[in-house]
Image (cartoon, rainbow, N blue to C red; front, side, top):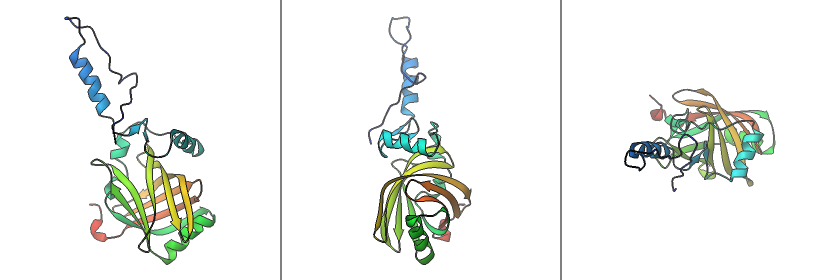
Length: 208
């Protein structure tokens, strides 16, 4: 993806008069370095490849959150240790029940629900979160932006037992994280509210 350069009042390149009438090279270079430090594709905390600007703004408003503009949340968050690993959804506690989260519950209780967090486009970044249920591909989610290192907004598309949910938006809060297990509180437009437990599929993948 072509890098995005987002200028603010503190990062916009400016010039200062020098003794030879030109711009101060050191000042201009430092401004460019600050701009290049921005993660490509992340603008004002959002991954601009996920949904439209209107979609992203609507999700933030609906879930009553604001994205952090601290880009380090993308490279230093609670899920970073699990990048490149597969986790099994072993538990679900439904807070607001609907037809689709009931299907998810059935899948968890009777089958094998696996999520793989793929590596992103550069070191330290997570990519797509890919779901398989009983060995079949059932959906994919993408992080749209981080509220904090333990909370984020995601967008996903999912198909389960002949039922499809497209372009759903949700907010995720990590409420417990160990070297092998993550407990996530989830709330989305179409899948309502529930808490899910994910465990590393293989003990050898435990974070040390």
